[in-house]
Image 1 (tube, rainbow, N blue to C red):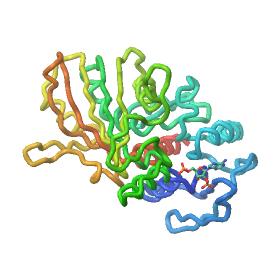
Image 2: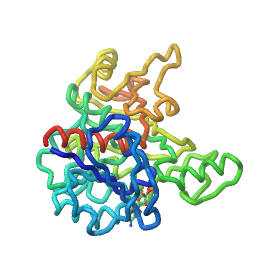
Image 3: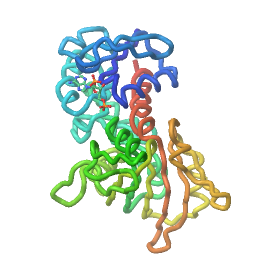
Length: 330
Ligand code: A2P
């Protein structure tokens, strides 16, 4: 069977990563269609050594033989065009937040809940970047020990805000403090606000981490809280994760568990200052876990430091991995 892929938002930060990851993972496709707004029509993008002309997205875009569409063109574009694509038999993997909490839509991290793909109705949601790396680390703990409660504290890169965030930091480092992406200068700062504030005092990003983690782990009884912070880093989100397990554990067993879990690299040698670093995770597809240690302040408490490239595993790579699972079922 032919596999034709569409990338919607192909000129954007995540869209370009879709093309790069399709190439890096040698994803098997016959044809590739690149869509963006009118503004980018005619632009040339390359993937696996071939050139593709960017087409303006419209209601007829999916009247072709397309099996899978990877969307990252913002929530409004997803809300409008994903149902059109889905109604024409195209399976949409959507990187926006538009459908993530829709009970009809699977929210999938391949290492964690591939079984959720079973009942899709042609739209599958790719989770938030900070959620993806967190649940990859939590899943083996959940399966072996059970999880009582989680405290997330994040240190998130500006690439998560697209080109505007990158520009604010680049210019800020030269002393030119812009506020295109954030309400304050990002260079020299930690901003405890990602996205807008909600009535409960949390930001939208914090509630995404909480709600999406419960949906992906398929456990609404999990107790989770989060503080999400933007830091002056270009690529990779770092996360301090404090976990209360249900059962007792040995730290060495937990380390061995991470070392043998899919998608995870254990980097934990404090004596030699070895632990996950944003700079080293950048450009990679895996989730790095380290600083594994007991939290003495509670029963069965554990502390972790978890790092991954937010534009790769946190976005494009996870979506392409979902597409790989879909293709295996064709
Ligand atoms: P364009 O480059 O033509 O504006 P980012 O998240 O990095 O800002 O990228 C957003 C992506 O979504 C870009 O590829 C952008 O295309 C695309 N996009 C934005 N609005 C639309 C739209 N209404 N229809 C199709 N693509 C869109």
